[in-house]
Image (cartoon, one colour):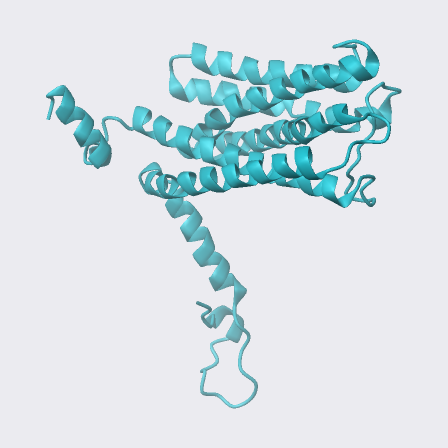
Amino acid sequence: MFRFCWRCCWGRPLSAPGPAPPLCAWRWNEGLTMKLFHYAAPQNFYPLAGRLWPWCAAVASVLALAGLWVGFMLAPADAQQGQAYRIIYIHVPVSWMAMVIYLAMAFWSVLTLAFQTRLSALMTHALAPTGALLAFLSLWTGALWGKPMWGTYWVWDARLTSMLILLFLYLGYIALTSAIEDPRRADRAGALVALVGVVNVPIIYFSVKWWNTLHQGASVSLTQSPRMASVMLTGMLLMTLALWLYAVAVALWRVRSGILLRESHAAWVQQLPEVRARLALRGIA
């Protein structure tokens, strides 16, 4: 709810004659900031994530089924590539999301280094396995498409090579943070790796423009109209939204697991129903 701010109204009484004082966006932003700080605490974020991730997973499943149905059943065959092009309904969304997730990891890494917040580090850890999976699927589906189109599963193309580097960055992040026993040192080291590697994301995106590559250019652009039929674009966007919600759902689920692991000795964790039930089964409580 908006409130009047005396900083904007110069201490003017609300009953004074003349036009009403402006609504103060500063107060509204202050309330939003306080809510964000509230959920930055693990004990407050844990129940919120528990309420959100099942809904994200359910909607992602529906969108994925709809996207696959549009892409494989409704969309017509391509005039040049025939039926082989249909793999783009998986290849393109997983490629997009592999890059988006790494950018999200870089964002959370900045917060980790700047504010030393526990939740931001947990979010980075939670996103890395999903990003690695999507990067692998991008390379795999691209190889399946490349065999009938190029006559080979792999070429050292700029786009393919930079995507392979992205997969290695994901795996390197996971390996490094798992090898360091001290959680805080692991958080800082992983954040540095994520920030150093983020330069690879624009290289992946612009590689088809900067170099002469075999990989075809983008069919969807923010500055140009799509170069594909609307039904094809619909299927691709549905799959992209499905993968985005899937990534959110899995990340929230992993963050909850990470919170339980790191805060296992906290009193609020010991009072959680699921923790008490698990301890009761073990005969501890």
